[in-house]
Length: 144
Ligand SMILES: [Zn+2]
Image (tube, rainbow, N blue to C red; front, side, top):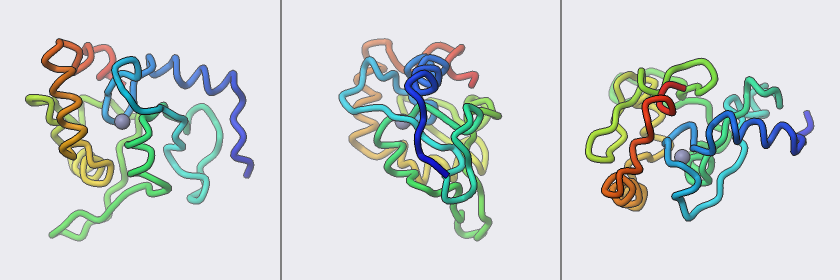
């Protein structure tokens, strides 16, 4: 399958996400890193270039996720898929506490683990945003 995504669709995905990473919820405007299109289900695993399979993601979430679609949680050894921003409510799986993005479900736990939401540099960035009243984003942005 082609990796090509039209500029029109890229812009649609970016605007649909209100220019906010759909995984860690850091607004692009306040970030020093680039943002990009993410295939929620990677092409390698049969995902498509359809708008329903695309998310707007910061480069760190995208890099940490890679082509993975889930992980094994320990000690249960259960394979748990990642959060899907197209079909699930972010606030159902995560909550923000002092800029920490904490999991509320196994899907949240799998996503926090592999995306490394609370890696120290990322946490420091969100704490600075929180101190400026810019994180977490308004409830409307946490709903999807
Ligand atoms: Zn992110």
